Image 1 (cartoon, rainbow, N blue to C red):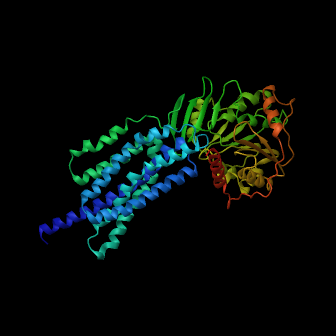
Image 2: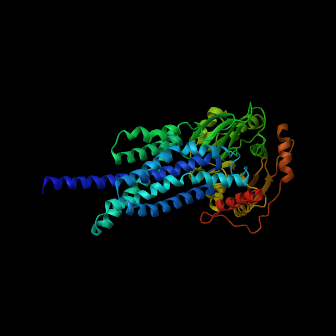
Image 3: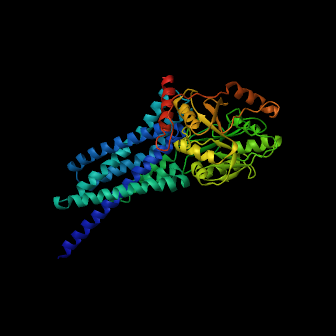
Length: 510
């Protein structure tokens, strides 16, 4: 074989390997852009299924369009320059995403439930649509690479399969690397910057002209002009991106400190020195007074966040009765760290367990007098497996004979199907069930027990809880859920029922 032939074979192998590396990188970039898009939207619209469905739908539509257009363009201009221009264009647009999306996102201040519906729809669709151009370009890369690589029919299947293997493998890396490392460690903007730089350098490498490097990185440099915060909030103290969510700590006024996750329309933790919160947390303060004053009330709290309930118990409940030892279960350790730093969560207030609440209930051998379920994922969704008959049976097995389970349910109405379903499910496990309206716009308090219970009387509670107890007493009832569905591990459409509430709320605004 001649030297010229050897060089030709070597060049062809390098071309093949470069194209495989090319589709690996673009596959990773698609997923990194998708998860970055979700993180950009999350502080404003939350992490609900509605947001995910909108984003994923737009991404899939963009990819499908890219596949179709890429094949057509590749047949007309089957040159490396074509695939390079696609990648450079995608990289430039990705670099500018934070800058382009910021004006639209900052126009939404109230979140999914507390913003005019038209503005929510327009902003969500408009912002998600910003990701269409780069994803269309990235979608066009794979068929373009196939056109460049496949030169005879005999090896078409093998080579096409190889390209799609490396593209999908890149998508796998692009799924785990941002979510588990770059976003929690460096933030969403840096993750976007890394993706954009990779795409720009990849396209530049196809041209092989270093002088284009400076020009290709200009969009990345320009993107740094966007505000350093993901979501500006008045009184902001700090913002943290965790593997689970986006969290912000901010001052409501000179004295009150709040924690919000994802869509900051809601408050997940609140510190109010020397006064009650005015929210549903205050209802929980009455629960230990259902028990004899001298009896320690061993309490399990599922969904501790930054520790509002343990802090309130230590400050407002313990001085008036036997101590209430709390085991606080919180899946996100970052929130606990924020609680210790900004919400006066002391080590003595709670024994902290960083775990999923259902897993802890299933594996612990401890018994409790009081169990509080106040866990939400994606801010507005109760994890379905914390609403099922099987979960409540596990809770019952860990409650003392006189024990009580309390659960906060976010609902727009006392007749909402979600609340009725949880009531119906609790009724199948606990002999006694009670319902009361808790302080807060969308909060209902469910109380379940083996034995009949009643709200504490005025003589057994401290005076500062009189108004809270009176408010609960005015709505205290034995609920009648009717023929609501029984939620099980096999069938618990909690997210769908929550979505229905959101759509009804948005529909009423329209």
